[in-house]
Image 1: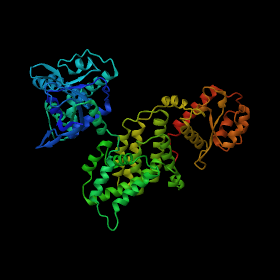
Image 2: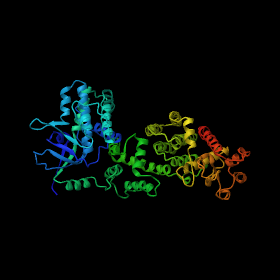
Image 3: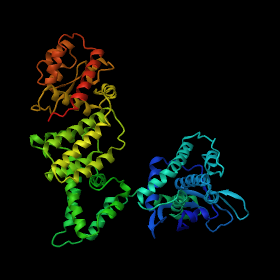
Image 4: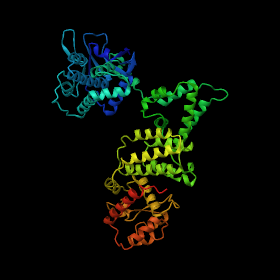
Length: 578
């Protein structure tokens, strides 16, 4: 296999006399908001301050694998096997930059930027640098032309994504937005709008690739498969661990760092923690600030001093947090045997039922200050009961999008950790409850979603949620917390055998002991009511009293009861009992 591989910048790649042809059998342009945001953050993160000025710096973005003889200067076409998404994205970004420079009457700068989209050969003939067949002619007219045809509308999903990428960069590079973001990232560094656009242009041009050329598609795809092998790369936490071990390198008489890391891993071993990277990120959010997985290493290097004392302290904190995270992510009553701590287990168990993870950064902080004695038990009960209630309504029933919740919990986790006395932690708790209340769905939305909750032997998706609701209703019916139903079967008042469309509705369900449920099975409503009378569950006894005059249990009554249960769960649950 013959190939050439060398590092080149995007400036180099787009200055060479090359047409980068994306074969029609390649996948279409697929980048969406997540990939664009990641690229945007990485580009701005790469900007540095030198001599009190903002300057672009090199940033490696991967490989560019091409088919074609690199020594052949007559045929400028190169077929793109790997790197098409980045080439097309940068083309879109240059298109936006060219238009913005034109808008601020920087015609020469507009022309220079556009030269990275359309160049000229040695005979003065124009050629397009990136050639993509599938979005023709939309990509050419709406993105690559110097005088853009804004009347062109996308006709395919690929073209919609291309236009969305254009709008993304257009919004990000709008004057007030780019200047505001640069000011936030680099306080004290003032730039004109034109200089800000030039800085972003230069940062793209400084992006570096491994420029690989081969003479056949067969060889190109062999290289592509190696570069994109599915072997497990080092995770951010592996890199951080290696950094810690390089400083905490004492092994005699005991390799303390190794043992502590073994303890951290041990909390993962029996599945008590989802994943070490997820745990580590939640720990970081709880103590140091909001970040993404791909930035964990950079954040660690920025915020943790590289010396033995700092690394040892960090490792100790991480070990303690790992123990707490195990209790949070896979709750067990064995961790909380004291009656007064039952609310802790109940909340952790409920959050697990609701599949809620955004709150874990705050829970880590809560357990930490609890251990330090900086919060009253009543405040712990107050926030946990409200968090349980909030996520029951917000996530479990209404399925709201959790936009901003992770950031909010991270912020209050750090605020809680900063508390030095109980009054400060109490103030933080009350403030968080007030903030969460502003995001709580209204009752109308809640009731509509609540009525849709269903469980049958064939439809089991909501089973755990149904069990949670019936357990809560039983708790309210009991008036006190002396009796807590830990296990029961789910009784369908109108039997499943009727195949009625509302048979699985929450309003048709009761908690019953397994034996009693089995005996009643498909009996008539009148016979079931006699059986319910001997149930030990207070909510079942209340049902008998409430419906003692009913002879036919039907759809109207089922939906009526579902609304009554919704009222109980929304309003009674919103007022903490402890």
